Length: 176
Image 1 (tube, rainbow, N blue to C red):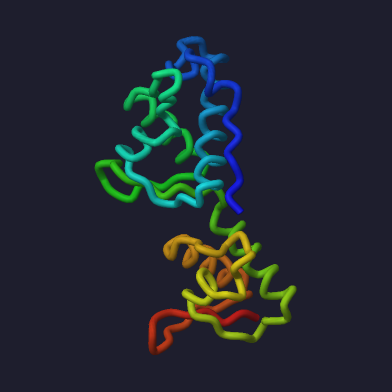
Image 2: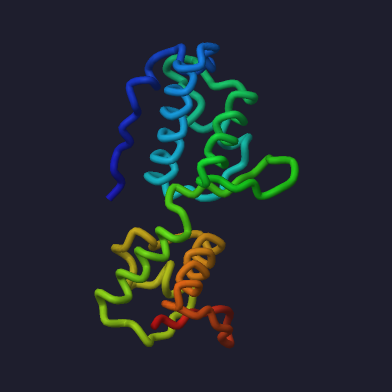
């Protein structure tokens, strides 16, 4: 079920698309932008994006208002998300990024809750089954991007709740 996205009130407010010089105002504005980016990507299940795509997406480009956040400002917002641990640059030029609206540990926790709830500890899964299998269709981690899934499983591995293993057809995981 595709939920319609609730844009925050600021999105309809033209000054939102210009970074404010006043420190307090700008702090609030940054918080609002960060939360907008995370909720938008979460709703659209977006994990990897280029800065160019971000700039053209409705996220930073309100066509109705004919306002878009300038590139330098987008970089500032993305950098803020990186400091908060919600974003990782995928290249040296900072042209594409992985957006983490949930941190790997949080994904790991969700996956492990599903495993426990369904009595699947001591079972082995391929990464594909976990993120794309029929059994996980109604789970929030269904469709999780592979690099993110691996990080989530690595977090569980550090807690001794899972072990990432090599199977004939790629990687898998065993839960404890």
